Image (cartoon, rainbow, N blue to C red):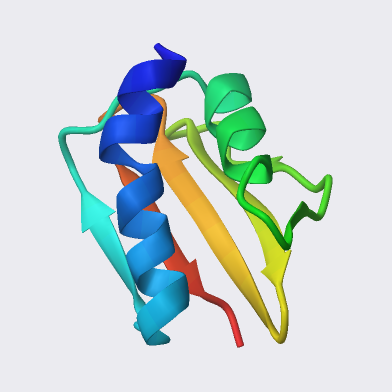
Amino acid sequence: MKQKIKELVIPKILHTLETGGEGWLEKDFHFPLYELISSIEEIEGMEWMDDFESNSSDWDWFTSFYYHPHRYCLSGSGWLGGLCFEKED
């Protein structure tokens, strides 16, 4: 699973960080949150903010990362699947 994350998710995150892009949404990505967080933390300079929020009705979840000088949100849906990574500030 972690190898798939490194092949599919990490390049998209790196592109966002390197270009200062606003982010991306992939509706077909379905990965365990723990594997996502641990893979993203391996990016040099990336810090997980150790926060996690969810809503109970749709199983949507949100967590934050800091990559100087910006804060980013990784979010997804346990019900519908998919991932979003975007700049928060």
